[in-house]
Image 1 (cartoon, rainbow, N blue to C red):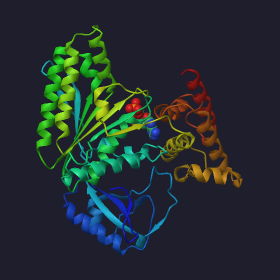
Image 2 (image 1 turned 180 degrees about the vertical axis):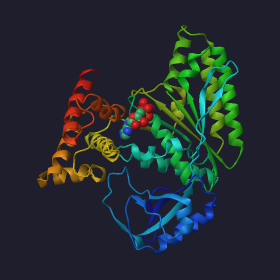
Image 3 (image 1 turned 45 degrees about the vertical axis):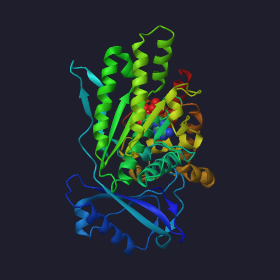
Image 4 (image 1 turned 60 degrees about the horizontal axis):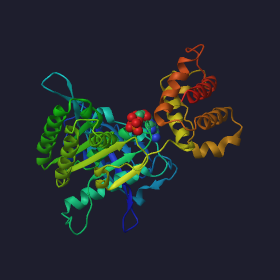
Length: 421
Ligand code: ADP
């Protein structure tokens, strides 16, 4: 569960322990070993990695990394908690390396859904890479945790009503789909003692309707039959991600106006009925996204308990996104000729603002990064993450690439990109 305060003023701090792919150790044994290790340590807990102790051969052999996951949005990294103020809650997991299992329909066409076993290697680090200011990630995590707890405790839905449908809406490229996947991954880790198996089924609503409608009906039936089978297994936690739900509303509208075969309305209705049926299963969470920001007029949106608007990144979020990009380019040695580039730690937004007047040469870089973040106003997270690549491709000499020169090119590239929007 997300960090919260206990009655005796201790803070519950989630600690995630990722096992090596080769490890065959029992989760319980690793959990106990990590708990013992944390008990012995008189350390300050901050967000981030805890080194695996090399003198503990059991942990060194089995554990890839240990991470404290406390922060709201990773923006308050300076809050240090001392060991006696916290109660670590250890979650041990191993990443699945199986990749997506794409269902191929009988005609050889790729089908409209993908299935993943969670936690998946592909989604590792995704949660941390998504940057929002408003406490959005923490809110989603708390919401899902409460929903699962209510179900687990058997709260009567006639007395207290809640459901397990999340809708994220906002402009394209703001990270909605990624956030849904990352949330599913996070929950699969945090709830693995209750649900040892976890799957994510990714449905593209748009592709359901781009096929022949008669086929779509069959697809929906087949899809939900499959999901139903997964859900019947009590130890399974199942996430169903439906992307671009607005296409359901569009299909319904088109059917009503007569421009689409009336089959489509049956497909939409079938989907809604199936979702209602699924709602009664305790171990399913339905995650949906929509690119339409105005009121989405679609029956099932009313069914969603949590509707969160995901907007374009603010100045602070833009700075943090670009900082992480730059940090990666330094770390991988693409950016050079600047001190010992690989080990430079750029300050976060708050410290950068404070330290601007330091006069250090390195502050030149922070200043430029702030200016670049300002120049990128209105750009989506997706465009921001592409910007460093485009800037690199625009350099006259990509092999001698110093960060100051690089940031100048990045501002130029941002301006060009924005003018082409
Ligand atoms: P959407 O579903 O809203 O169209 P995606 O989930 O496809 O957006 O986002 C595409 C990519 O853009 C993400 O994988 C991520 O790399 C980047 N991105 C978007 N928003 C953010 C953000 N707020 N912080 C960090 N990266 C972001």
